[in-house]
Image 1: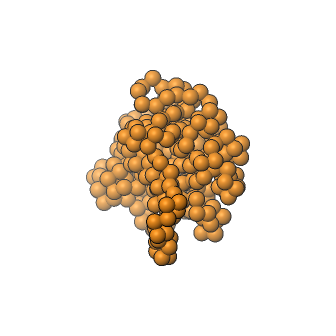
Image 2 (image 1 turned 90 degrees about the vertical axis):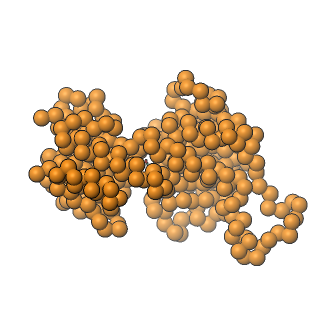
Image 3 (image 1 turned 90 degrees about the horizontal axis):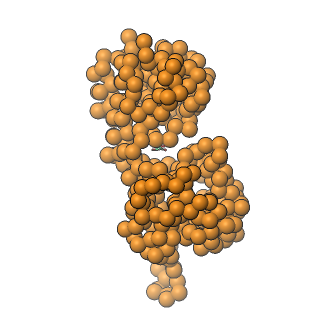
Length: 329
Ligand code: 8YV
């Protein structure tokens, strides 16, 4: 009998759809993710894995599952999956592109607005009874309108961020590996250095790769304006956090809002959490009820197609495994 493993709890609708296929469906119902050892044990006779960011799906996990045909990631980023190992073994890897772009850009823009207009720190002062008595020079914020937003990585999420910024009358620049032809209302600049120098806000939207690991470090913070604010909703390791702490503490840049950190969860005693000019969220950019439901149903679609022997609709390595795919009988 076909077996599907879901590594975290999911929406009842997703569970029902999986079970309606007739497959045996095992859902990891604990509030906590399985440990790597638990995953290796649970995956032994599994055909389809519905995976989450909380586990590394590496060669060891794949080798524990000789029948595994598909890894369907709940999310657009799949840097927790060892793609080369999946390619070697002919295992399809899928993700959930497109549907979470708007929610993610909503959160990125909310973080930008929060840092700009100080909704991240002033409410705490009010709670302490520090109203400020309309001091004309007190509690000054930074404008959003007519400031320059630099978008690093112009994929679907970056494009949604550009649309939001246009609605706020911002000037929008973008830097991407390739200049894109579409009209984003954004101006292409051809180096990371230039976009860092020219922007009041930098929002990161590029995937985590060996090239983008620690892409933002001491030298990059030095290039940014001292008044600039960094927004990171992509992956924690894109930012060198030690360098960020120094840059925020010394005033090299004015602020940072991070949805993603290293590690996740960030420990409660992490130095970044001591800074008033740093806002940290618990990796929730896609976490609205509607979007998470769409992500779950897309993951179900991917896993069910593959265990039935069809190419899953959102396969990221179809070309790479075309010759040795396990989903073709
Ligand atoms: C999710 C994400 O929060 O899609 C991604 O790449 O990081 C987020 O949407 C994450 O995958 C939750 O499992």
